[in-house]
Image (cartoon, rainbow, N blue to C red; front, side):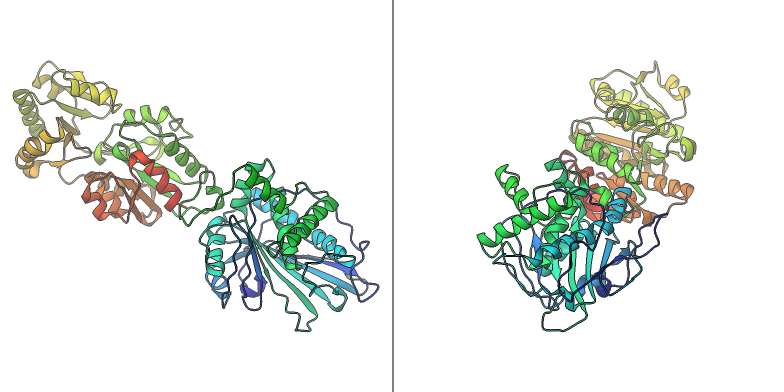
Length: 586
């Protein structure tokens, strides 16, 4: 039982019940035999179906365990079950007990929530209901054993009158946890819906009947419930019925007759309790009929909509724009937008760290409903812009600005005019240039920057505003073979040259970077670098990736970015940001 495997449980908060791990229900027995159906009066609740069946057995400290999964049936054996109890913590739900008036058979039910499941009102409410539902189910199932004429059930559990109490543990967990159990005990590296493990040893004459443990993945249950049109509570109840029947000796794996008997008993219990659903076995066949059957292979990536079942690993995600959040068409994909919204809903704060201006970011994210007070960017949110040269803190207030040396700007403008290579001067929310050019237009039409204002002369441009950075626009070959070599030498200690994309070269003040801007913002917010995950692709992201607790460089990124990152993710055209969030952030 889980209380024996690990004494560390998490309590389910409730204003109406004391913080205990299990509910204890006692039934008077007139004879030292099976329970009478008239000894309990608990109101029934609803029920519901789930995935596809395939069970296997494993001997673990004298246990059998069954797992409902997808695909063929297999058997295997493992020597010990201590591993999962030693490595994970649990939280207790509650414990209630009724006073005893005469000799009674005590049903001791532990409802546990795995520690990595975040506090979720729906899951907490379901756990509370299971505290009542589980004894009801046990009572109905035990009553059915009296006149049972099933031929295939293992009858090692039949005379309950010889026991003083019966114990059962039910654990609610997520896919990640149950997948590890499935791998550890069954050598099947995929998530499943329910694992049931028997602790009953007929040879031992004990006063306590330890039925065993039922492990239910709430995440898989939620997915199956949505597919079948049921509520999550209904789905979990059906899994509980299925798991309990395995503990009572039913095993649909051994033959068609055994499957038919277990299916019949499932439906009988659901009907007697007034719970919804057909039973898990029948629901599984329905899934096969509807071609919804599939085995999920090992993958650390969480599924869309599943983050509610995981605790965030980071408080903040710092994310680059061009080449990272934006694809090759400079658009944010639906998948990336959805992942960001889901992360926000789970309390993770997303901060943009980019070479772009704030208006450009607002323009892009407004299209996918991620701009504004409830999004990830607004005029009142923190952010790092223009390669860290403009940093906004709490309430969107400017906390740092660094301007480029005017002499460097003047030289760059003369270079642009003489070689007819367009240069854009960035001044907070404005873009300024010396002449019209198709590449200048792309900065606005493709990269969403403010439309460049054409200045009549170099002198006018220098006098128009303080300039934070410059960008030269050319072909990728022109930048790498001509512009970058020239300005790397010309700028010397007066400025730095950086690249975010191949066909642009940026000139920025020395000693500044996107990474330094991120560090400054973290200090302002009193946030540790250990609390953040960073996602980027360019060499201008290197310091940010190194600073973060987890740096993710997308596969389309520069070799320098990949070299300093902790992991290399999918490309920006493969929803790399969404993949990083679902794979690493929770």
